[in-house]
Length: 287
Image (cartoon, rainbow, N blue to C red):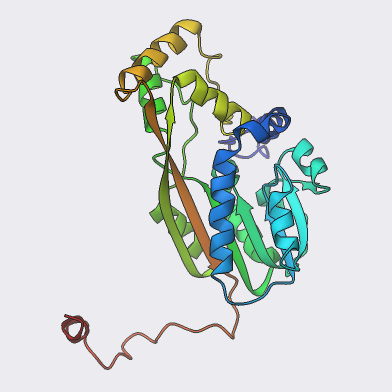
């Protein structure tokens, strides 16, 4: 490694882009997770009682997000880490931590389903804040920590003493809240919800993950692909967790995040020590 090569990447951007390109043609048949995430984003956007003029959408496997914002009268730019996705929506291919836009370009940024696998998440959040105009809003959603517990356990059990990271690590609610604050967002919020999907086999789940581009894109050497023996053993462990009807419940943890670019017009937190009522009194008055 040369002196200026930098630290090793946790995620491989080329592998990530290639996975999204491979998934593009068959994505529509495996898009339930994206639909769930996008519906949640749009519901949260509807709760914001103000208008937006120009939006950036990060994560555009199809034109549904763009069409939803255009219907609200918003000018939209689409961006995706995958070349095929970007081309299909007349968008731009780029990584979230290297957005090719000037500061203060948008008053709204939506990130749908990609931030869990960007190599530099703290950097991506800073870049997103920079491209927002003052008092601009960022709304994001992606897979969070705790996702796919049945699959993780099945693979760990099947590989015994030599487990490999077949599912990349993800961020939890507390860490995401801290990252939003450190990135300079005002009024940062992070929360999560669970989506449970029942599968007749582990292979059906892995098929979904592949064609929604949600597989492992870590750059570390995984010592080759899973062998048939390991897959068969893991599938048996997965089936052992099935309900009486033969289907196994798998869980996706959906991580939501939001924050505003600071602006002088925003309400400021009260100065420390300025309260006129003690916490004990406040709690007693609500009893």
